[in-house]
Each structure stands twice: as structure tokens, then as C-alpha cells.
Length: 231
Image 1: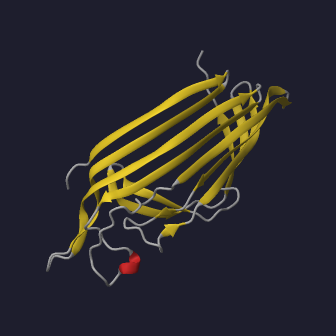
Image 2: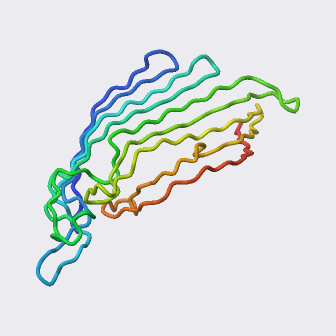
């Protein structure tokens, strides 16, 4: 398998509209020659799939992220990304599910890359207020983290039967921080118990192997933490 040859550039701007606030924007373009993925050898007596190289893929898009503090007690953050990823040239790809039983090789040049959502959004924040618990000073806090991604292909060769619908997730936590470093909080991941699907590369650096995993169900817990401070 040939090594991937990656050409990437991005340009952007980082700003601080006011004290305690940032706003950043970037556009990017990545081209990968000899992209490592599953291909098919359709020669007589050799028909099989194996890890090899697609000619070329391209990913481009734009991202915005920012954060802000509103007074001393409220903080917010957010990010929005648009991503367009396609196979520029992949003439010997394995066929998608709906073409099973037909030709064993399909030219999918121009089709979407797997695992890439066109839109992705994250948004979260925290609010806190001074208080006293067990005669010790600190602050009560409540926070949330939310995310959304639009639909994406879960198959190396895009198939109308292997599209994962878009979904949103919500995580929350609330508790108390004492000024001496102790804190306790109740948290929930996937609070709305969304049934979702994760799509991951099987191993770092091996972009041709993919793993689909059911997402985590709603999980609730309590955490007690001590932050040690060096003097």
C-alpha cells in the first residue's frame, strides 16, 4: 500500500471583538493522493477486496468558533463547521449495497466520503453564583454541552441504504465548587436518550478501515473531585 500524499492549506482570522470574547473563522482545503481504502481487483480468478489506494480524495470547508463571558458569572461557547468531502478519482471501488450481484467494481468518482457530515454544530455554556454550603464558601454552577451533526454515509462506497440520519446530543451537569478545590456535581450524558450511531476510523493513520458503533445511551452519575493547587 502506497503512503498517502497530503496537501493541506487553510487561511483564517482570529479576533477579539471585546474583552472576554473571541471569534475565529477559517477556510481549508485538503487533497490526498493515494488515499488508503478498500479497493477491488476484478481480474479473472482474482476477484477480491483489499486495502490499497484510491487515486485522490478532497475535503474542503469552513469553520467558525467563538466564546464569550457575560459578566463574571456566565460563559458561552459555540462552533459551526461546513465540510464537503468527495472521492475525486476512485474508478475501482467496491460496489455499494444496492449493486450487490452486479458488477464487482464501480467508479464512484465524485461521490461523498464516508463519515463526513456536511454540517456540524456545538454549543454550550455555564452559569454560576456565589454561595455557601456546609459553612464553606464557593459557587453553585449549572452547565450544558450540546452538539449536532447532519446525515453522513457509513459505507466507503456511498449507499442510499447506509446513510446515518443527523442527530443532536445534550449533556448537562450541576453542582457546587468550594474555594478550597473540592467540587461535587451531578451529570448526565445524552440526557434526551437519543439513539445514535458513531462512525470512526478503526486505527489512527489507517483511513481505509472503518468501525460503526452504537452511541452511548443516557447515562447519569455523581462526581466528587479535588483540584490540587501547587503553591
